[in-house]
Structure formats: structure tokens, C-alpha cells
Amino acid sequence: MHVPECFVWTKFGTEAGQAVSDILRRKEGERIANDGVFYWGIGNAVGPSILELLHKSAEPEVLFSPIKSPPRRDDVAPETVVAWTAAEGLDGEPYRLPAWSLITSRFNAGRPRHYALVCKSDSSLLDEFESITAGIARIAIRELTNLVTGRPLGSSQVTAVVKRQDHSCIPSAEYSVRLKLVPPYFIQLSSPRPITASVAYSWIDTIHPRSAIGQK
Image 1 (cartoon, one colour):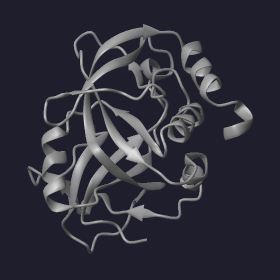
Image 2 (tube, one colour):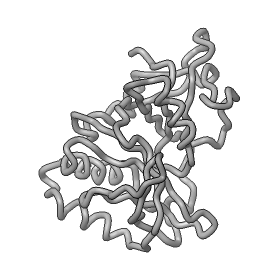
Image 3 (tube, helix red, strand yellow):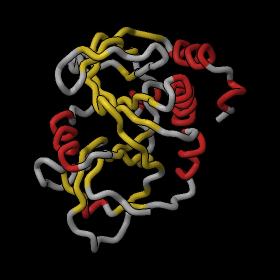
Image 4 (cartoon, helix red, strand yellow):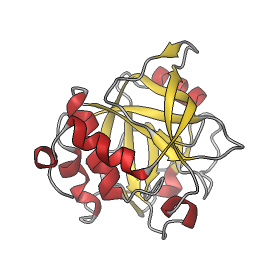
């Protein structure tokens, strides 16, 4: 599969007390309810890099890679989980989240903002992410640099907007899914509201029965 020259690369794993399978089931319900669109929460403020990506690509994409290391304790059992209830776009204007969208994260009092990529898939996320274990697609980490700075990726970067520089590197990292980014592409979230884990589960069962999106 051809890898784009410039794209968003993000890693995923257990987050806000939910395993990947539960997150995907919730995001699939959101995708169905929003005509293919879903919001993928991230912790990085990559807005300026997204703007640069939009200058270089009329159809920006995001590639997802599984985190191989064991999840951290504060991801598995965070003290506080919040739902983000307000947003603004790249232009700084308020952006209204769809009624069926739920973006959660663990709460960090020192970081009152969170962010999300606006993604679209025409097919089931449960099917798309099946290739996590297949390992059928790989990318060479050493050929990637940060799009704006040109610097190599840091080991702690979970989400980055990247450019491929040296195409001779040996592929070393799996990526399981490649999806479209759609307007407004990237949003900054605010107004966090504490929730319990049961809220996320009841939310998905409210908008779509379990039988409609499968058991994962």
C-alpha cells in the first residue's frame, strides 16, 4: 500500500480506562450516527502542523499504529475521566460537536485542553482495525520527520504531522489503518466534565444496540 508523502501519524492504546476494543466499539457507533465521521481524541496541539499539511495535501490522511508497550497505570485506571463538551476549529471559531459524539480522556489539572482529529471512514472501524494483529502494512520510522520543523520524531510523540524524507529506510513499525481527515480536520477541546466509565458504555447502547455494531 502506498504511504502518502505527508500525513498525520498517531498511536493508539488503552485510554481513559477503556481498552482499545471498547474504544473502537464506541467510535464505530459514533461513525454510524454521524454519516461516517468520528472524532479521535489526542493530547498533542498539532494545529499549526495541520495547517501546513493542508497546504501540501488536498486530501489529508491519518495513519494509526498500535502502541506496543504495556499501558500505563493512569491510562488503565485514571483517577478522573472527563468528557470534553466544547470545541473550536483551526480558525479559532466555536465548533459545535455533533450530539452523537463523545470525546473522553483522563483529566490532567495542568492541561485544561485536549484535541481531536476529525476522521471519516466509509466502512466499519471494527473491520478496519482487524489488521492490527495481521501486521500487513509497515512504515519506516527513520524516514519520518516532523513536517514543520524537519526534526526527527521524539520517542514520546504519540501524534505527529510528518513528512517522509529518506525512502530507502527499512519499514519497522506497523500501521493498521489509514483514513481520511475531513473538515474541520482538527479541533481544540475545552470545558471538561467528569464522567464515570458507565457513561461511555450507556452512550453507545443508547445510539446503537450492541447487535448493530457487533461484540468486540
